Length: 73
Image 1: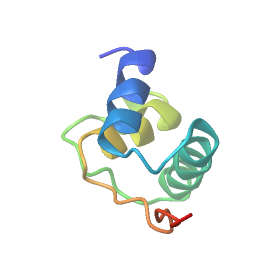
Image 2: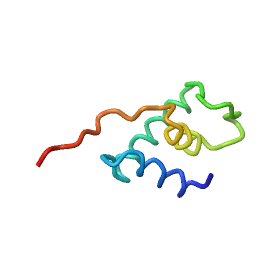
Image 3: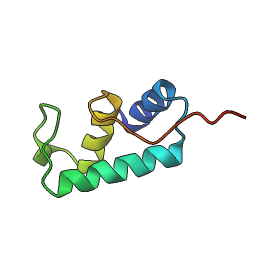
Image 4: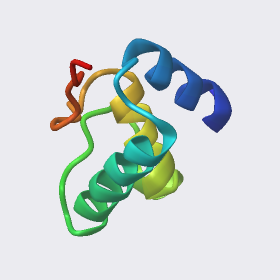
């Protein structure tokens, strides 16, 4: 799946999240992967960029993004 499709899927599934928050979540997971965290997908991490892998994990729901709540107005 393309990056744009994954991003759209994540944002559709998480209406309380915006592009900026998603970028922060992907950056954090990418950093974890680059620092030795194992992938939650059956993909060789050497065959794909860490940022793409992080985005795929979030899209599949394997990595939960915490801290985004709906604020009542």
